[in-house]
Image 1 (spheres, rainbow, N blue to C red):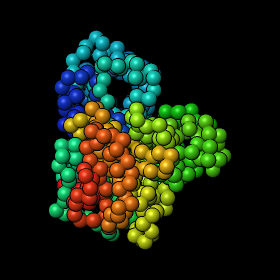
Image 2 (cartoon, rainbow, N blue to C red):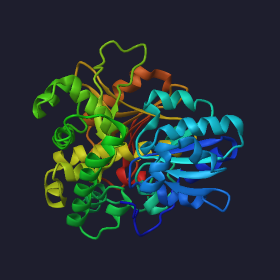
Image 3 (cartoon, rainbow, N blue to C red):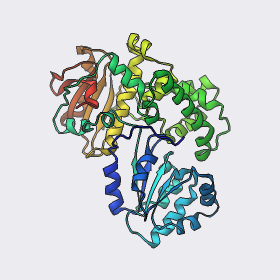
Image 4 (cartoon, helix red, strand yellow):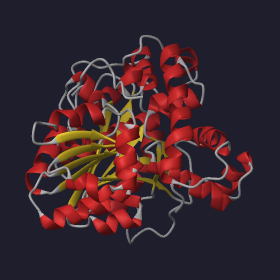
Length: 414
């Protein structure tokens, strides 16, 4: 599973890796399998920094049997798929405590190792973690990838090359995994996605969790795909696949660790008493999601409501990717109150300033589409930067005070 696409796209996280290696002993590049991590980190392997992969069975055996010996033999190294032998991290800590030169170890992990308490504790202050997700639209188009920064700086995005209608549908259903993107037809991309999910469940889950009922995982993942973009009800979810809500929650955490999906927490400030506190489920890749819900181009073009849910995930994924290399630290939330008023995404910066983003699969914007953003503007007060309705159209237009209609394709074509 290590052929990571035929076309090499620029990866916008690369300058962040260079920065981190310049002043930090250990850098972990975390993200899903097949997102292109191996291809990228190979560029950092030189004569003095050896490339080692734990996908190699002999190396994996050495890492598990004698982690200290393996690390002692490496002065500087790129170590790929480090989650397969977590004991290596303690050996790396010992080595780094004796020699704290920056840039000694560049690690990749296709599970979120920072959720394992031993890892978080052992490398605190010695390691920087960066996230690399599948390809963003801006990486495929070589555009700036600064959509969130631009909105916060008061430059509302416009595009000279809008992609609308059928073109938008095709882009969303394709997703961002390099191997899927490089395949010529939707049928071949769906075949890749099915094989990818099977391989993760059969192999990678065992590396990170002890799960008794592996056969429940594919069904659970399909049920989660049906709930994408909606509030997560664990009791209902567990009932659909024969699991209690506690087990369903545990298994969902495994999918999160493997970067298949995320729980998006509600935005709140101290003025919110009527907020719905349940998180929403969003998938990291819209191509994988469209395969899991069996959505292809013809129905997506016909049924905009069904397409709208996959589109919402695509927007979430694009914003999440851009946040990994943005100038500021941004967090993504959702908003819904007990009056059913909601905003798809609320972006917040470290100063508490917020941008609301509403996603529309339609080519026009109506007054009703603004109710959530107006409510958010009232709640956030001076901290409200802008409210944006991303829609399937061509033009960036003001539609109220600090409210804008902006083409969806500005996310990757600015």
